[in-house]
Length: 129
Image (cartoon, rainbow, N blue to C red; front, side, top):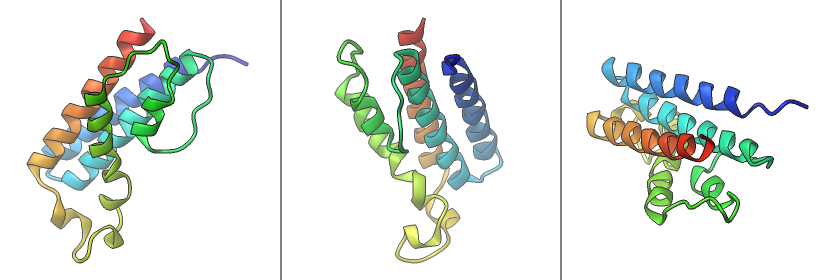
């Protein structure tokens, strides 16, 4: 079976583009979710690059499960934890005590989410070079 790591990485890049488009359109909840998806897919690409299967949606866990020879900083894992908070809460009303998800996200959150996803994707690219 062919290694699909580059396919996952290309989709991660496209998801990051979607995050940026959503932020420009002031759909900040979608920007946050798309940024989380970009990071998740990028890290899954790195797992595939190391001939590992990766399951789940928790980016921090996916980073921790990388092979020992892949040096992932604790700071990057903390940033992944921030992104993981958007996986459900940015999409579903029951992710918050009240209000629709879009009422809880603004430019600051989407800017941070996109920046963190970019950093994770850059880390992945540096490990796959």
